[in-house]
Length: 425
Image 1 (cartoon, rainbow, N blue to C red):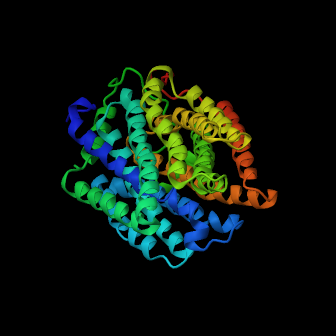
Image 2 (tube, one colour; image 1 turned 180 degrees about the horizontal axis):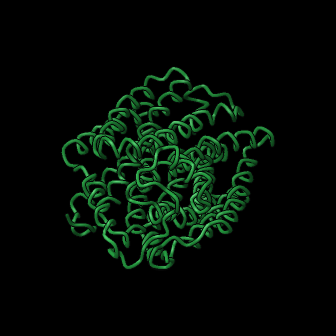
Image 3 (cartoon, one colour; image 1 turned 60 degrees about the vertical axis):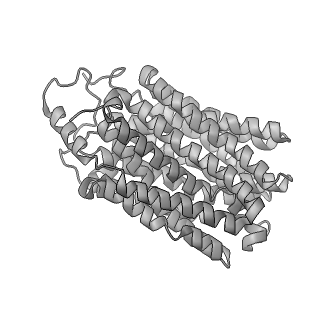
């Protein structure tokens, strides 16, 4: 059984196409829906907590599904979980099209959370199964590059479709095409990758098989239970805990971008296509830069890229309400996107570095559980901050400060995880 991108290029490209479509599925909900929450779906102006309800629902559901998906993938296989995720997504376009109230949008977002937790997790896990350890940063960078380019493309395209066809009909046609295509390709073209993970376990069992052995957590059983891995990731191993809290807080930024950036820009008089392009700058920068930052971490390490990424991303968030005009807002979006590109693939790569292949899928699932819980916790926090401050700008300050503090915790508690740069003795 051969490992590496080149040896498995066909499946690697299939998985990248899958995650592009995963990104486009969530992206169709991130421009038109929040911007038109008041006029199209009846959310009263200034109802910040009601506005963020759909992001809260998404975060808690997706976080829970990430937790489940890792264990399901180790028992059922990656492809079955991927297919299940696409089946769950099929009703979403119809729910948005027929929605008589905001509660229907919240329910559609619950289904979206299940879809994203199952599908995005599997595209990442599957690629890690058949690629080499020295390619992990590149692999996760390419995975997230493809996904968030999909998010950005969907935001722009749905903005134009909503202007031409109407909000509901534009989202209906876009969603049906994307989700239908993804489900068919997952069924016909994607292969099961669990055998590669099993083969890697056998190779790890051979003493001296690796020139640089990762710093795996100590005192972990060969086949740990779910509760054992959860405790390890959440508090027992300080490195994993530092990564998980950083993952949780960085999602505050994405919750802000999703729930409040379109509303803020709409209030400033920006059109739907204009909002799509400004928010798209964030997504395109995040996506494109990950192509380089993931590979860079394979050379220089993960730790400093992760900590500085938190701080730079927070700075970009803080800049948004400090100026006016499309150029200013696009620049602040690009800075936030660059910081996110520095940290996003490399937090996942750091987990993969020091998680044993026996329980790596579960470890990634639990990290992603904490990370995507940040959507829900962050949305509640920024909704409360905006309500308490009486203005939407207060949410920006809440997120910027959280990113600064979390980056400091990661810098202090974390360490370099790359096995070549900090191998086990």
